[in-house]
Length: 387
Image (cartoon, rainbow, N blue to C red; front, side):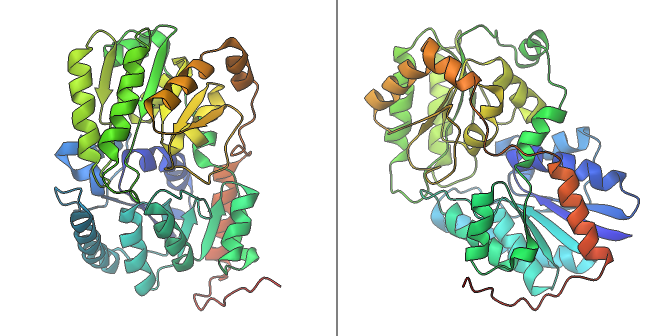
């Protein structure tokens, strides 16, 4: 058997990786070695490792790395602690391959340790752009440390090749999160209401907003503008999912708590809904608002209008159901008014999700097994020059 390591550090990342973890567990030739880190282990972010255990997965290792600080200095120190912790764990684990997803700093720490310890890395969601974030540089750095690449669109595949990766090792498989939607048995509206203790009517908005980490001191003003726009649309009932452990994420979460306290009849908030409840909320909501990648990648598959605010996701391919707007209150208000029109709602229902592709998980599994069992991995990579 080949031992496949998967590292997850956030609630969203785990939700995307879950079906791949299930497939590895089913495979007689592979052994899943699950490493949990980052926000999963933090009481402040809901100790979401418990959700992983409730889903039936055994956690092989917990790597503590997250300082109780969301400052640039605190995050930099967390990365350093992560590299130390992952190095110790990888020495014990005897991995044949490590799978990483995305662009979080937890994944960067794991990639640095794995690369130095000569563990081949398979990277999901490389080649994408998020020009407002430190994640941009992190994602491309992980690409250069990885051996196999699984991109969500052909455009992103070309970009990974542009970074010097051999096309033979770069595979366009679609977004695993979109495939999850098709495979997950979602909750009924009544089940969701009972689970979150919140009435779901025809005017529910799911709101997720994270800091734009390459901007200085903008988060409070930007999020306050969003809250003011939501106040002006008092018929909207709001489900907030809170910000992650990025720089100044705590500012957003404090403002959410204040808003919910003043609007208990029409707003609720969660650190983590979990994948099933979150996808179910997307199914029954009227629109999605914020700057999360899930609004760009997953939400269009439900045919709902999406308002993407600011520069956090700037550069990503998006469906016709996505309205991009600035961070000023009037801009957000105008976007909400457009999203709620019958014409745009019909447009959203009929839009195509550019991240959707058949058999994403099966494709990833097939490539990984081919490389592991046919001795195709040669860590001395040559830089591929585009001619």
